[in-house]
Image 1 (cartoon, rainbow, N blue to C red):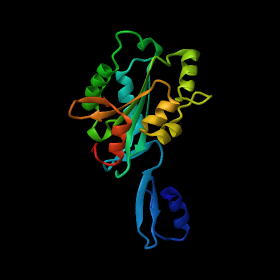
Image 2: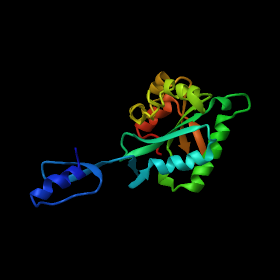
Image 3: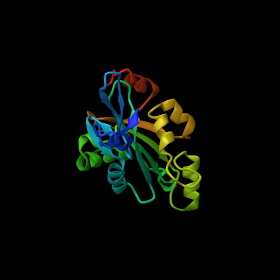
Length: 206
């Protein structure tokens, strides 16, 4: 695999074909080039480029100021590109009685549906409730909850590696739950290990 921006610099001196698409690609022995992924904080899904910052902006406009959201792409076997996944942290004040996560996610589904094209809708949600919030105490919670580094920067790399693996998420994120988009119900349905396995085997189409 190589970066086409690097290819641009190398091949220009040799006066050969120049490619500059902002993508990571690989070539075979016959000289054919294949797209692999986008470079930067974007990913490709259903043949379209998805900006994580744009999706985060829409979701954050739905959430309260104290809540947190980070969007990233995750790989699904037998699918080209990466599916959108959002980790949402509802702050400590939202974990009390009367807070219904399923109801909140149903409203979020409709909000995202109205404000983003379908290919940008998050396929998976990773949800934590009752942590985070403003101030140093909230930042410490997020660090322990695997959302941020010691310098309070989002750890997207770790989130991408864990993907939608329910068991890994259960191990690394205490009390976190995973949901996937259910277009028929117009909401997000909780993901179990059995359902995750069916998604990987393409028995459930997203």
